[in-house]
Length: 377
Image (cartoon, rainbow, N blue to C red):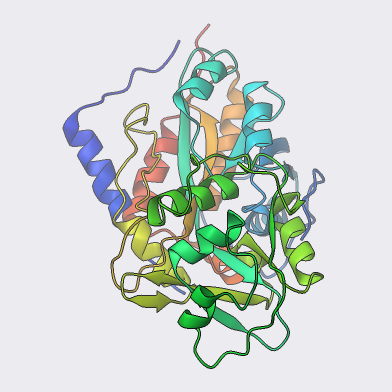
């Protein structure tokens, strides 16, 4: 039997306030194999362990964080095996809907149509989008002798729309006085798979540079690619080995690469967890949220607030509000409680540069996890 949830303005207001309080507390390759335990990773004293296996799939932006979470959990819970296949957000949502995995990781919240499709595997209940990973998206490039560049939103959009095609173009040179820009073709690299990182990146371009980016935001790249690669790791590898290339990756995949400073208002902002968290802090709950415990956000990609870095993604764990069996529900709850714990968030932040959730948001996440129930006979 599906759990009924209140949609009162007070409940939604409390959830919005908690999500708006998202602040910093501090600042591998995808696989469907269980990650070996990670000694030295902190775990909470109240950690709940399960015995058996739990499976997830989806976001490659979460890839490095998920490796860290799995290693920490399995190091403390010897009988638990957690499997996560970083096949991309769209693939993860599809596998979740098809009941092939117990939870999905996605950089774009489950929409109304997908939520309706998932009700069959969720015992007739709605899905919950739980924002457990907050991180900036980096525009990375390879130019010999150039460590960073300032790019206005319109310029970045026109590069990826293939309207600006050479690195010594006037709009790039104007924003970077004194930088020796080569007379070299720009090679934009986009994701080849259905990607939540792409959806967040194109949402940013659409909001920040609507005249230069005439495409609707989507997880699929909207134009014929110059170069493409699968996953964040694939884009990073392609850009690294291609002089003149530029791509977009979740922050933990930068690995010392040259990075773009984004034009925001009248300044250029460097990528950082603090600047990314500033954007998320001002973002309300999405209008498509299914209820009190669904914490999907409506990010303000077009902000011009000083110091904010608006090319950001919130990566969600998608779960059922009602699971058909008690064993799966208990495993999902135990692992997610570790993910959102201070220890889990700090472990991921140290590895990836993500922004740990604060105590107020953690309370809302734990309330959502606690609300997961089991189908009644």
